[in-house]
Image (cartoon, rainbow, N blue to C red):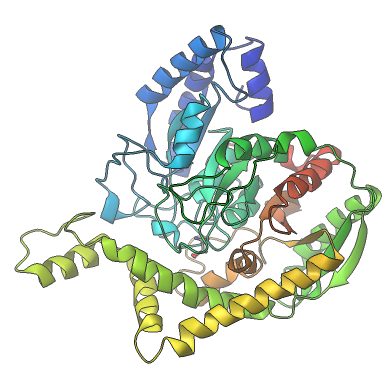
Length: 482
Ligand SMILES: NC(=O)C[C@H](N)C(=O)O
């Protein structure tokens, strides 16, 4: 059962080939058997999962089921879950039991899905390797000596290892796409504003966006249909109708205009990855697409701009964790200042502290214009690059990451080397565009992902482009040996 996609599981449930309780039990026993090796879960919610599965079976029996009723899923531990620890991968929130559900969690509950547990992640979503989690690193199921990517590494590893058929992720600067690439799965970061951020612990509010991670584009479409939609509780949520993403997967690609940005294929890209991306592009030509080289001239400014904007917003968002109302509180504080200093010093790990310091500096009097304001101007230039490109092409293809999964410790001593893992993904967040990663082959036995970028609210197009490729290839069907 664990090898089936979400679409196949949903069909099996509807046809009563198996019950949601049986399915949930099967995944729970896989988690118990294999997650010791991977560490992809922070919390497994066995009892509530079985209760939700039982309720789903009853709903199916009454003929009141929705398309995903009874399907088990995992939630990244950044989404608040009522009555369940929501740690965000941090000691700061190790004992935080959320009093409410995030909108995304609430929507999945209403759809009758079953939450298997909360997935491991980089602390407060800051990282590209899952090595910053307070709960220890997640291991990549393709080679447990390598990282799964980050920050949604627990979600990616669990989906790849078939411990869950699908999971949520969040993407502030590549955090859905880069781990999807490293673990050989499919993930989509929707347009900023498409999925509610309410109850999703804030890192950089102008960039954060939740999205689905699964094995196929079809499964991502099914999950996104449930996740997306207007939410009055999120001030940046966009009030646009949600298309039936699964209905447009089979559209023809005849005449599709593909752009390949020359900046994505320059120095720093692994030669094997470049070869696999070109091979995937050739498949699209067979499907009727035309290809042209384009330029995104300000791409080289995306990582520097992101590392001003994201830390600036994080320094403001994380100010709430002061040991008074939220989060870890130190023992026996002498006075208020001591309480703040020690609670934050003990509760936050090194990478989070680094970002808070950078952000506070960038926003401080006298530096604001030089850093924050300038980064915002660069952000506009990057958006305009894409705007120009989308006048000529329908989608942009390129690598998701410059390398395959790297080894533990390889980049921890050099934060800038770590930040460069997101060199191809970050510009998409700065512009607020939708982006996707799909598996297109292997290099040294490790999965390689291709990125598909579209114009605002072109999620249907991206999913269609990904699905057509998955109909003629089987990279997304490969499974790691556990
Ligand atoms: N949250 C993300 O999208 C991950 C990104 N690598 C960062 O550390 O900021």
